[in-house]
Length: 89
Image 1 (tube, rainbow, N blue to C red):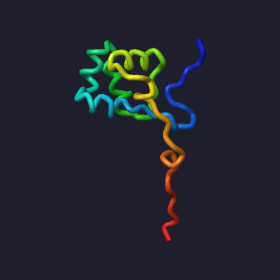
Image 2 (image 1 turned 45 degrees about the vertical axis):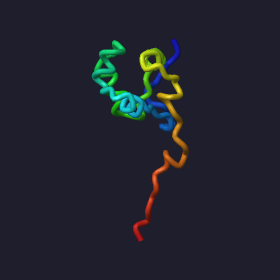
Image 3 (image 1 turned 60 degrees about the horizontal axis):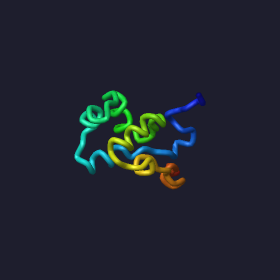
Image 4 (image 1 turned 135 degrees about the horizontal axis):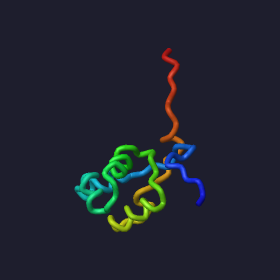
């Protein structure tokens, strides 16, 4: 099995599970019960936009919510990822 990391090195791939669940008026705990995923897993994905679920978990999320992976994951633009630095002068 290939190596898989939950945190991409660039930090530009983000999950939008919180938005999707909020639009469906569903809490992360309720989603964990419906999807048969651990409450810890769903809470982690829900609260940390930089946490990327494994392919198996992503597949389950998509099947349960009837969405596509692109509805859960998106790539942040370079402008979103960059932080503004001020000289303070």
